[in-house]
Length: 523
Image (cartoon, rainbow, N blue to C red):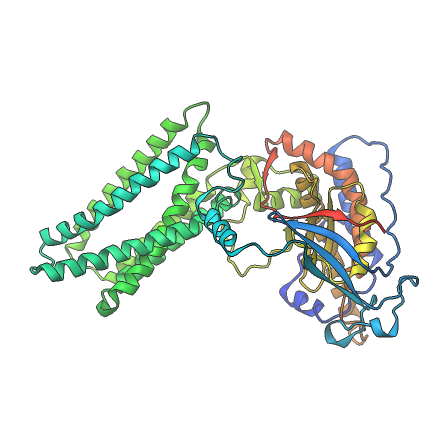
C-alpha cells in the first residue's frame, strides 16, 4: 500500500482536476493512505492504546453574520457571510441566495463571504513610517534585538555616511590617475557615472535586505540563487563592451543584481559557519573560512591575468568560468548539513516517515533537500495563510471547524488552487506550527492518493461522463476527518524519531505566514 502514497499528481492531472469532478472521496484511496501510515507507526513503536477518534464533522449549515476574525501584522479583519441562505435549512438555499461557481454551477450554500477591516486606515505619515521600518529594523523590533543594537546601528550608519562621501573623491582621483580623461569636466562626468552605478547597487542591496528572516528559513536556496544572480550581473557587465552607449543603465542594472547577490552571501555566511563550529569558536571558523576564500580568489585572479594575455574569446571564457563557478556553488551548498527543519527539509522528513516510518538522518535529509526552487514552481502546502485563500464558501469552514476545536490550527484543501492550507490560531506556539505542517503533509498524501484513484477510474471508465466540474472544499471533508485520526496517533511518533536522528524540533524554520485566526464566532 505504501507506494500509493508517493504518487505525485502529474501536471496534466492537475489541469484536468481544475475542470473535472471531484466527488465524494473514494474509500479505497483513503484506506491506502491510512493503512500505510498505520503500518509506519506500528513499526516505529510498540502498540499503544487506540486513540479516541476526533469528533465527527458538524453538518454544513448556512450561517449569517461573522464567520471568524483574523489578524495580520497587527490589523484585524472580519470575515462576513454574504448571500440569502436560509439559516434554518441545512444545505438548502433560498432562491435569491443561490450563487454560481466556476463554469456556472450552482454553489451548494448559495452564499459567499468577504473580508472587512475592523480598523480605519492608518494616517499617511504612519503608513510611510511603517514602510520605512520594514526596511531598516528587524521584525519584532525592539523585542527581537538586544538594547545595544540601536547605538551600534547609529554609529554604523554614520560610518557609512562618511565613507560614501569620501568615495566620491577617491573614485574621481583614481580615474584621473589612470588617464581616463584629461579634462576636469570629462573626469567629473565619468566619476559621477561611476558613482551612480555604485549608488544603484546600494539601493538594490537595501531593498533586498527587506527579505529578513527568509535568509534563515531558506538559507541554502537563497545562497545558490544569490550565486546565480552574481553570474547574471557579471554577464551584463561584459555586455557593456558591445553596447558602450548604454554603459550607465546596464552598469546600474548589473550592480543592483550583484549587490543583491552580495547581501545573500553575507547574510547566509554566518549560519553556515555556525553549523561547523563546535563550542565557542565561531569567530575562528569564520576568519579561517574567509582566509581560504581570499587565497583562492587571488590564485584565480592571477591565473586569469596570465590567460587574458593570450586574448582568448570573451564569450568562451565567460561560459567556462561561469559553469565552474555555479557547479562549485551547487556542491558547496549541498555539502552544508543543518539540524533545523525548514520547509524543504521538513517535507523530506515527513514524506519519508509517511512512506516508510523512517525519519532520515541529518545527512540524508540535507542531501535530499531541494536546493533550487524557481518562483514559478507550484508549492502544494501553505502555512499561516489568509482565511480567504483557504476557503471557497462558508459551509466548508462551518463543517471543518469542529474537527479542530482542540487544536490551535485548521487544515483544509482548496481544489481551485490545488493546495493544502494550514490556518493558525492566535494561540499557536512553535510546536503547533510544526503539527499544522505535519497535518498538512498528511492531508496532501490523502489528496494525491485520491487524485491518482480518480484518474485510474477515469481511464477504466473512459466513456463515463463526470458531472459537477466545480469541486469545493466540502468535497474533501472525509479526507480531512481521516487525516485527523492519522495525525492524532502518529505526530508524537514522528517527533520522537526526528529527535533521535538529531533534528531540532523546537526551532523550526517553516516560514509561516503572519495571518492568525484571532476569534472564531461560536454557532
